[in-house]
Length: 324
Image 1: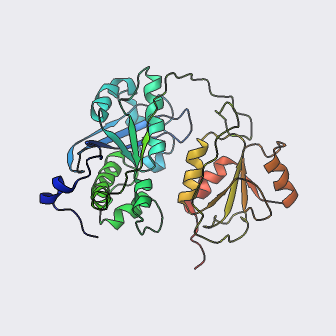
Image 2 (image 1 turned 135 degrees about the horizontal axis):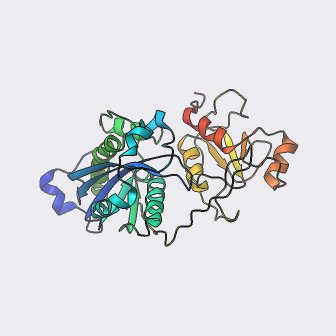
Image 3 (image 1 turned 45 degrees about the vertical axis):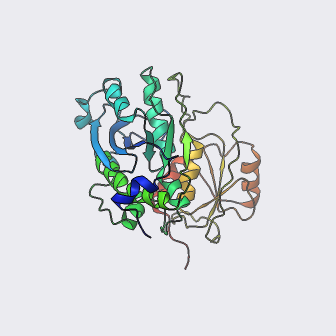
C-alpha cells in the first residue's frame, strides 16, 4: 500500500475531510448506563493525522472503580483525583471543533456524553469516527477488530493495554496511516453524528435478585443491517466451554449495557448476531429467562442454551477461533 508523502499530502488531500481530530480513550467502572469514567486521554491531531499534543487525567468516579484487574486504577489511586466537572472544561477545550476518534467510538462517546450530562453541560463534539468502521472501509486484513490487531498491522507497539494514555497513543499512531490510506484512495470517512444528552436523571431501576439491572424504558429498537458472519456455525454453546466464532447468538429483553454496543462486541468477536431464535441458535442471552417473550419460549422448545448478560460478557473475553 503506497502512502502519501509529506510533499504531496496537501495537494492530494480530499477537501471534504475534517480539519482536525481528537483521538480519545476512556477507562470506566463498567459498561452500563450508570457507570463512570475513571481516566481519560486525548491526542489532538491535525487534518493529516499528525500529533499536535496530548493530555491525560484520572477522574474520581465517586463510586467503586470496577474492574481494577483491567485498568489498574484502585480506589486509593482515584480518591484524590478530580471529579469530572472539574476537568470538563479542559476536556472540552481538547475536543472543541474536532472529530472524536475512538476504537468502538459509540462506547467512548456514550460514556463522555453521560458524564457531561451529569455535569449539566455538553461536550463540543458534532461528529465521531470509529476506527473499527474505518478499518472495515479500508478492508484491512485483520484477524479481528481489537485495538491490538490494528496496532500490530501498522507496526505500533502497545506498552500498557487498557491504560487510557497508552491506548490513545496507540490509536493515534494507527489512525494516521489509516487516514492516509483513506485519503490516497479517496475513501469516504465513516463519520457519524454525535448527539449530546440534554438531561440526566440518575434513577437506575432497582436490581432484582438473580437479574441484571435494566436501564431501558421500552423494548423497541430499530433493526440494524449487519454484514454476514464470515464463519460457519459450529453448533450450540456448551457449559464450561468457550464461545466459538460463528456461533449464532440472540438477545432478549433489557440489558444494562447498551444493546447496540453489546451486539457490536459480539460481532467483533466473530459471533453471528441473530434477530430470532431457531433450531440453529447457539445461545440466547437474557436477564429474564422466565419471561414469555417469543425468543425465550422458542429457546425452551428447542432446548437452546441460555445465559444472562453478566455471563455472556465474561465469555466474550475469550472467544475461540473458528475451526480451520
